[in-house]
Image: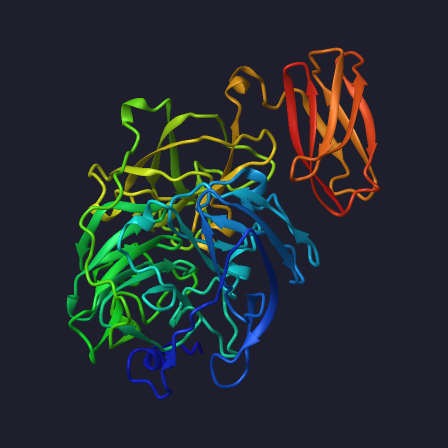
Length: 567
C-alpha cells in the first residue's frame, strides 16, 4: 500500500513531525558556471533513504543561476550519473546545439561545454535534463534548478530583488513515494509535497512587499496558487518576462513547467502567518490536480488524496521589515508588443491525439505521430512569424512547451487570454477539447541538422512520445529539397568503426559526405562520384569518441541529414 494518506495528513497541518525551514539554493553567476550532476540520497521519511539526483554539493535540486542579459556565459556540465543525460535551459533563446535537447547527449563521465550570449528578458527560467524517454526518471529525482535573468529594464523598477531576503525561489513539486521511500517518477498518486526539496516547509518573510518566483516542477499536477483567506497578490511576470502592469488577483493556475513572478504585500502582517495554497477544488475535471476522473479498469491509479481539494503548500511567518524595504507595487511595467495575427507567414495545426477517446494515461501523440529522433516534423524559414493552433482532442489537459522561442497567446477556446496570460510564454496548459492559438517569430538561429523540440511538459506524456521536433533553416533553403531525396541508408548505426553509406536517386554527378559533432565542428568530409545516380562508399569513425554525430549527404541542391552514433 502507498503512503499517500499518511503523508497527506503529515503535510496538511496535522503533522506529527516538525516543520522544516524552506531550503533556499545558493546562486552561481559570472561568465563561467560549472554544474556536476550526480546521484545521491536523502532522508525524506523515516526508514530507507530516498535515491535522488542533485547538482554540485546538493543531494537534491541545484543552485540558482543568475544571468545578465547581453552577457556571454560559458557553462560546463559534467555527468556523473550512470546513464546518459542532457541539460536543457528551459525558456532560453539559444542555438540548437546549445539548447540541450535529446540530440545533445552527455555520456556518463563526460562533460558538455555550451556557451552563448544571454538574449532573454529578465524573468525566471530553469534547467533540467531532457533525455529521450528518461526525462521524468532524471528530473523527478531532483535534477532541476532555477535560472534568473536580470536586465537593465527590470532594474529600473522598485522591485524586490534581494535573493533569499525579499526575492524567493519557490519550486513546487508533488511526488509519489513507494513503501521503500523511493520516488516513482511516473506516479499518479502524488501525495508528497515538496517546496525547494523541503517537506512541510515554512519561510520567514519580512513585513513588506516580497517577490515569489513560482515554478510548477511537478510531473503532471497543476497548482491553483493562492493564499490563506483569499489574500490578493500581484502577478508581475510570466514565463518569458514582465507584464505591462501588475495584475491584482487571488489565483494563478500553473501547469507543469509554467512560471510566474508574484508580489505579496505583507506590510500590515508583522507577527502573523499565512499559507501559500493550491485551491485545487477550483480546478476542472480533466486537468490533473482537479477531481479524480473515473478510470478504466486497465489504467494505473490516479486517485491522489490531493486531487480536487484545497491544501497548504508553504507557511509564511511574517516578521519585522528589513532595511530599505520595498513597500509599494509599481502600477506599470513593460509594454507588451505581440505580433499582429495579420503579420503571420503561416499557420500550423497540431492535434493532440490518443489511441481512443477513453485514454487518460497515454500514450498521447501530436498529429497521430509518436516521437522519432530521425523525423523532422517541421522546417521553418528563419524570421517566419507563425500562428500555432493547438487542438486537444483528448480527455486530459496537456502543458505544451516549445523550445527556442517565447510566444503570445491569441485565443483559448475562442476567448482572448486572461490578463495574467498576456505576457511572453513558453508553456501553455491546453484543457480537454480546448483549442489554443499562439503567435511567435523564429529568429537569430538556424541549423539544418540539430532540431529544437516541442512537447507536452507533463513528463510521462513526453517520455511516452508526445514530442516533435523542428529545424529553423536559412530562408534561402525554402527552395531547397531537404526531404527524403536522395534516398540514403547507413549501416551499422550505432557503429564501432566502419559505417557503410548507400544512396540512390542522386541528381548530380557527385555527392559530398560530411560528419560533424553536435557543436557543428567538421570532423570528416569526402566527395564521391555517383554511378548511375547511386553511390556506395564507407567511412572510418574508429578515431571518434563515443557519442552522437551528424552525417550529411549533399548532392547539388538536395541533402539528407542523419544521426550517427559511435559506440
